[in-house]
Image (cartoon, rainbow, N blue to C red; front, side, top):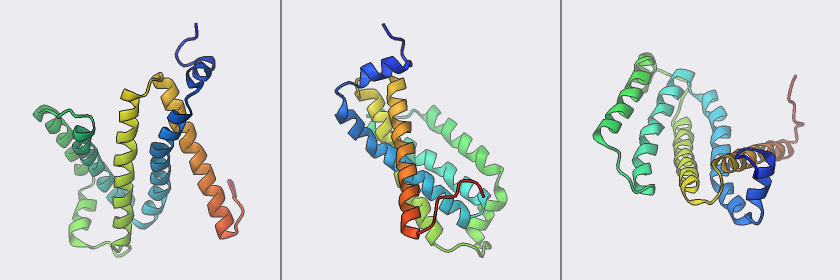
Length: 174
């Protein structure tokens, strides 16, 4: 008998599971596009502002998680989540002030639109993955390997397509 996490166990557990691979393409694709957009957003927002806004997605994921998983968070869990977000935001008070005063001349509304798309991708990708972890009859390690392998493949394919579209070679190290 194979142990959970060995390559042989992964191969055994994946036999005849093409439907599972196709299912995982969706959250893996969401997370891959999310990663690509994060670089674009970081180029147009200050790193501190990006981090503050990124922490807020956790609250949104928690809110939607309740509906997808059919389980409510308790008042203590909401309080703990809020305090964690508050603590993270306290470290970036200047970035929060910039959000309300508009003193950052580098930004327009476009970076916020891509950040909103990142939120949607993160919510959908994370919740779909969480749902599959509960419902798909595969070991957790196999599901994680599948998720991250597909995500990496999609990222590399996206890089190759972008290189072809822009007619530029892929340069890893200059």
